Every structure is written in structure tokens, then in C-alpha cells.
Length: 83
Image (tube, rainbow, N blue to C red; front, top):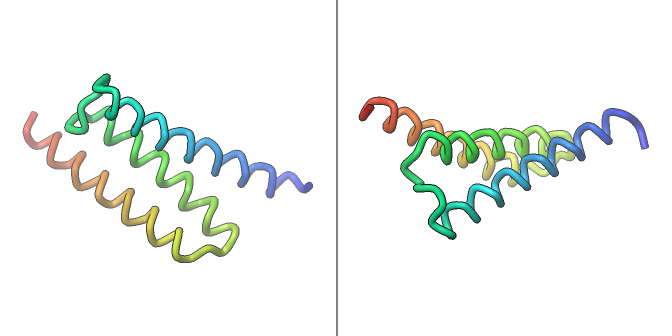
């Protein structure tokens, strides 16, 4: 396995874990979806997955995760404006 592939796999796993942690925290009521922390988890996780899926050429997942990040950025902007 080459170093670049290993790095892309690591980025993908970090992104997947981040999104799952965010979902778990909201589902358990530990964090509100209307917090900067939650939105940052979504943005970071989805951007990691954009990098990973682009590397592997899975364009439908690049699109999905790009939209996920954009929704997170929009929500973050809205939250910042309120505060």
C-alpha cells in the first residue's frame, strides 16, 4: 500500500467517525443540532469524506458530502448571525 492511499483511507475513516460521533451526540441528547460545535463536526467530517471520495472517484458521494458540508456551512453562518 502506498503512502498516499494510506493517507486517503485515514482521512476517510476520520471523516466517517466524525459524522457518526456527531449523529450519536445529537441522538443521545448530549448536543443540540443548533450548536456551532455540532455544525463544525458535520463540516469537518463531510469535507474529509469529500477528499476521500474524490480520490477514489466516487463522484456521487463527492456530491453528497459537498452538499452536506454546504448545509453545515449555511447552518453555521445562521448560528453565528444569531449570536
